[in-house]
Length: 447
Ligand code: DLL
Image 1 (cartoon, helix red, strand yellow):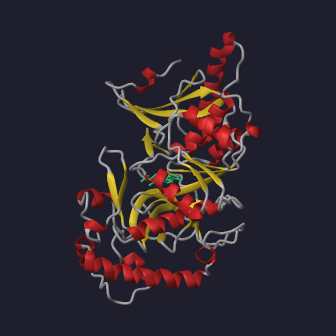
Image 2 (cartoon, rainbow, N blue to C red):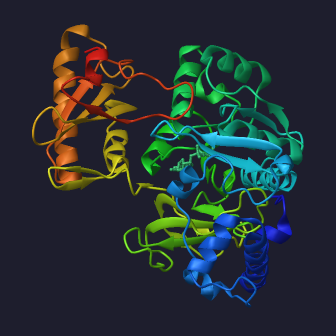
Image 3 (cartoon, helix red, strand yellow):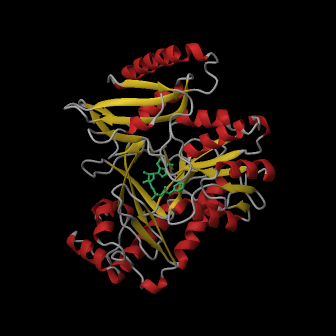
């Protein structure tokens, strides 16, 4: 399988470490001279930016957080004159305040390079037909994959998100091999292709590059069951570059290759910030070694994963990160029990009687919070309308028992008729919502 940048992707560990140390030293010198924010942070931490620095010194460098980006919104973390910024992207964020990031010409080139590597991981090359259903706009998904596909020489269909019927027609007519979109939208597209009378085996797609939201191994199996493709995980965040920070390869599907020649990766204990070793799950932290416009030092992502430095069967030597199993701030605490939404997803997706669409409702209408799990019956599970309600109740009991066993928590499960859970056609799926005395998200659902 051709690698987009064989040299960078198969470098020996020592060679890569030397490159990283050299780039880290250059970054510190640059930041001390061009970023008042980092010049201050480095001085506070007692770091001399011109002293020789090895990778072992990394833990002595200060962290950067999302709060730093917000406090210095919009241009405070720029390390180049504003006129050298060619583009701004960002994410909407949960609090309504966007996180904005800036790209220089060099940054856009690095971004295209790492997205081309991701497409290379999917086995794409010049002429490969790519259907890009990530949203175009401030969100990094659409334009990020777009530039990577163009650099690689792919035939790109920049369809963006939404308008599912039109997407189905384009997939039927153009016969793309690679699909880029969120995993939840991949499920929706699989469903819509079936509804349009296109059987799974007649769909041309061979590989999917899915990311921007967490998805479990069980969800991978579901997607591969509705679409005839290998589903690969791609990870990234606006603050670091967008998609292309890391991606799985089609050969192994065993962890995401981190482009660590550009994005130095660490895993730290989310509470203490202390570095963790290979295989230990903690918070991902990245340092952008080559970014010009808005570089970040030890950026705390809040995303939880583990690292594996061993080489992959595909020949790449880049370290691999596990799937992101959640964010440190999306852990729910229900009656003293820690619940990760990904654990609930794993139970639901393993249950054949329910479709892979769900909503977790944290019910705060009483003194003690409760977890309500709303899902729906799988398409074609019951054919007899008379028995459907009883069947939904039976399945709800079954799912409730499985959740109790897995989480150690009693939940209230509602299995609704097929099609009740709203499908997300644009942007990221929001699977956890709150129910309060003034707002009931369940009221809008049928069943
Ligand atoms: O979601 C960039 C992206 C676009 C990645 C397309 C992959 C594909 P943001 O909007 O800034 O950037 O959101 C970043 O999304 O911190 C994670 O919490 C989450 N996330 C992104 N990819 C994954 C993934 C883009 N593969 C935030 N698995 C990150 C789990 C992911 N979570």
